[in-house]
Image 1 (cartoon, rainbow, N blue to C red):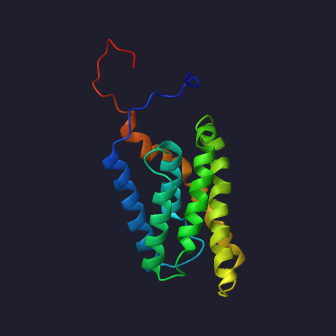
Image 2 (tube, rainbow, N blue to C red):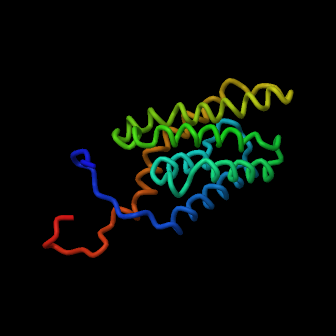
Length: 174
């Protein structure tokens, strides 16, 4: 595969780092729900799930998204399957788009990730509406926008360990 001009060659992702970041996102999402259950806050678990599904689809996939969603449903005491269904649909769409997303710059990637996050939020709203819990306020739709705005810093942070040189040497160009 020919790399786009200016794109760095990345090292393989460390599995411990991948699963550690997923666990950290889960803990951050749980803490956010305990401290401030506002609907407009970013969905950290969805952001990290989409990132790793796009960058490591063989390691993190729809099954991981489903299990993470079930964990959040149980922890937050919401309707069982609300997050699980939303993350599963989002994960499936991310897997179908993962090759396309990586060819764009960070702004293009953000514009591709935004509909995924909006679909996940929309599925949660739909599940809650069908269950009779009513719709969230209109300003709650800021959450997918805020989460998508965090795509660029999350990409820089989560790809940082893969950018370091395995064995730096001034005679090798890579």
